Image 1 (cartoon, rainbow, N blue to C red):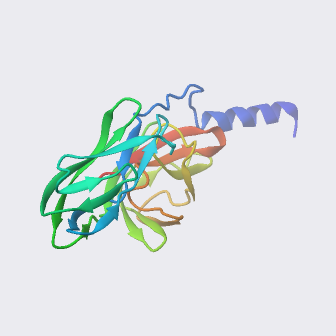
Image 2 (image 1 turned 90 degrees about the vertical axis):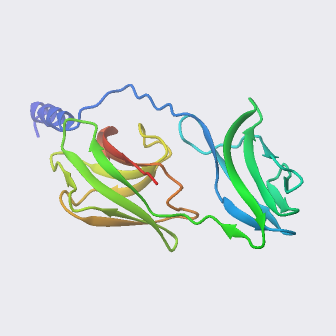
Length: 226
């Protein structure tokens, strides 16, 4: 192929997925209690766990402190070990040590039985963030070993985009640290993705992202909502 032809081909491909070199990937840091409970049987203990997502949405180690509003009912130590002492309710908080900010909290009842909060199905709407057509509804639910993402029959995407890929991420602006689902091969109508990974649930990620992978350009996203 002649040099001029190669140059024209690069221009055509690049213009099919236009983006920007400057990406604002800042998101508020957050801590989430990952295994909340509604009640704990009196006399029993339960280990609460958490994860910290930094200001680009990536997991990171950080120092936290656990607090109980009613220590005579439910006490908790700095490892997250919760003990039910007598019947009643208490608010359990996880606090970021570096600034004493309460990052997440749950209300737990000390009762006759332990009840764990189960993850429920979530859903969202895909919207374009470019000049290319991309829209549709979706839902996400837990399956053995991961999640199933169901794209609704109102979904449509432009076939003009080269290398369109879909991801799960906690940052709506970048696929750095995201979980790649795969290349988009369906551009209209209902379809699904079965995604497996250790400890993957509907609560693990906050966004479904569509990126033009060869040029690392965002095309659209859908926030995963309760």
